[in-house]
Image 1 (tube, rainbow, N blue to C red):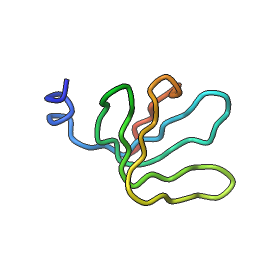
Image 2 (cartoon, rainbow, N blue to C red):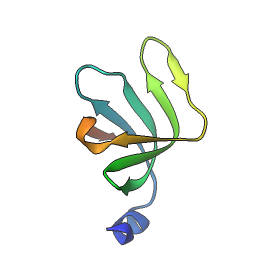
Image 3 (cartoon, rainbow, N blue to C red):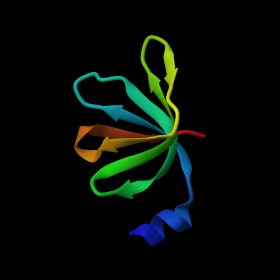
Image 4 (cartoon, rainbow, N blue to C red):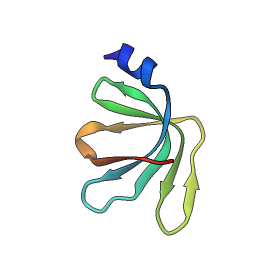
Length: 69
């Protein structure tokens, strides 16, 4: 599975979460250990909140992975 992520490359995505939680937008580095790894994450709520480092979002909390242009 890791080979697939290397071939695909990193993509800008928006993760839409369950229970109307704010979406997370950033560069999808991969999916390991039941978590999506997002680099340079932004939490999309009333105001954009940029986080430093990376975010690990549990796959069971994600409803939709939207690939952005």
